[in-house]
Image (cartoon, rainbow, N blue to C red; front, side):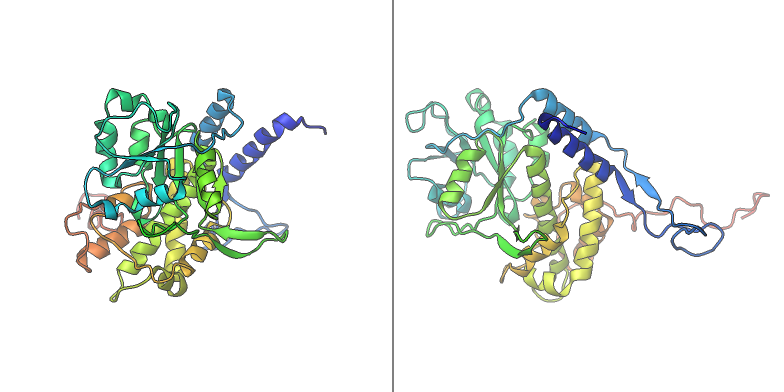
Amino acid sequence: MLVSVALLPLLVAISALVADAFQPTSGSSVAGSGRRGTCRSTTRSTSLYNTWSNGQAIKEYLDFLESGNQDIPMKDDVPSLIVAPSSGDPTSWELVAAVVALGAGEDVVIQAGMPLPEEVGGSKSFPIYVCVYPSELKDFLSSAADEWKAKMGDFVFFSGGKQCGCIEPILKERGLARDSITQVLLGFSLPGPSGKPKDLSVKIGVDASGEDKWAGESAVCGEWQGGFAERLERNGIRVKKGFYREWRRWMWERAAYDAVLNLVGSVRDKPTTMKDVALYYGEEVSDMLWEVSSALRGHLAVTLTYGFEERIFGIGENAGDEQCILSEELYPVLYDNAVLNSKMIKQYLGFAKEECGLLQNVDLPVSLADRPSLMRQGNLRSDGVI
């Protein structure tokens, strides 16, 4: 059967959605057997499937097709505006220093709350790199003056790691999590004003076709993705480019890494590194990752791409001496998002608060294990006597 080349992306997407929709169920209960096992037939085995009915991913893809924007825009790198935090010592603005170091020395740096310049480098068209602290981001967007709001389509946001975390909930509230908005996933170091960022991606092996497999790469989407990708490639940093729906999967994979490994390591008796967690607590990490993956699919219609577990462990095993941290400052950045739909995440957070003395001023969600049972206590007989 001949298929038009124009229809191939649609067919590939529909195939992926169908694959996401049907997930095999393991350990099915055998009626009347009193134990769990796989349902069997005397002639052939039968697989049972759960149907995932969240239609959000299909709707988002149809909206994308209706937009007609099926080419990735690639604006060139130009002199840019960098928005620094409104507080703190400038020597501690690591993200600001990194973006400046990646540029060609023509960027303009201003602090949040200052007037927006009409031109940068003699042009009225320029990206605006939002490098404020995640704790300031909500106030920065809410209090933006009209001239700033008119330029929000040129904003560039950063996610990933302890420095930037997961900011999707903040952006979604304001309609800024969409195809045209530029977003960057950090896969490079933040050395501060003393040096240039370095690539943090790691090679984790070779695939079946002989191609190198990588993990922890930087990634970018949106209208100014071409410009920032230029900066990274010019400085020897690997970067993936894609549409927002692809970038979002990459971002949530990194969010799962940040949340899970930091949490598993922080509840230990002694200070633990991310590398130690990946090497010695693999079973806990794996169980929690799969729970988070299921929660993302069910609550956000986001399915992590094949091989996510291998990539996450690859990043962790190459994290060096980076310490696991669980603090009240980091909690909103790493956990106040969809990962809280994982039962294990909530249980470990509760343990960290009750047994380890962490997060004492944080109101944690009640885990399913901590909720009182809805069943009536005692043996209620048919005559009403307990």
